[in-house]
Length: 334
Ligand code: TRP
View (cartoon, rainbow, N blue to C red):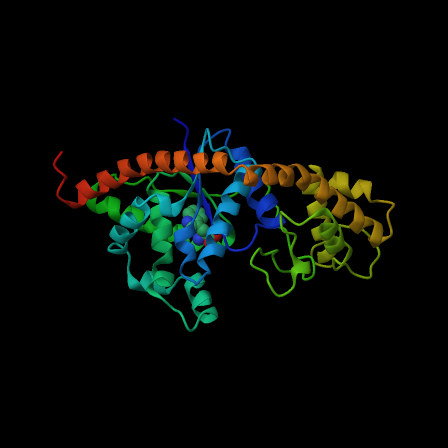
């Protein structure tokens, strides 16, 4: 039995180049050594309001994009959180083992409450408990996450340890998985901030994975650089150029040194930006082609959705039954 990896993503906004090279590309590699679950966490998404038809479409697109990016729904599990009721059941139970004080300290809750002052619902508050349930349901050993989710994972560990102290070894206590080379892609216009898929104010900041080639090139042409006219990797003094170099290294699978050597004699930022844009187009082309084929094949995707939900449900039931027994819920008579 291989150790288990669980990761989830919300279907808000089309995933960005940052999500791909910073996260999903690593997940694809991890599939070799781990048993993986990749979840579209649609239940987390309803802490804010969505148009139902639009929301459904976005969720299906994300699951399809997962597969187009190389997540394997035959050997691993790619599914919707809302198709596995055990997430909600375990979340309720874990709510009773989580303190108001702990949840009040979550920085994401504080940030999101500021952003949604008119809708600070209880779901927003208990969001990290549902996330803990996601992880603990599957005996997850490792959780690949970015810095912004570390606090949530810490809480998940605390809840698991607390529960185990009372009821014995029920949950596996998970660790964060920090990728060996964590490429952090920054915004193209404000290269000191991260490239965010939820960006709506200025779309030139972010490359979406389904942006057509001409749009990608245009965005790179507009990318912010500096007036130093040299191509060096120095995120402090040349954040824009350094970000473009990181992107180029990822897109061409080269080391930073190789990239720097390649651009040693390039003085024009214009040419440099075009090369980076071209490399990104080339990297995304097969992924986009596969995505468009898959999204057109409704029957195939439907079958994957049903089959993967079924397998996730089976695994989740095993843990949930253990938990219910441990707590003392009445077993169902056969
Ligand atoms: N909260 C995570 C985010 O916003 C998404 C998420 C939900 C998640 N459940 C998870 C991530 C479980 C890792 C494991 O990015």
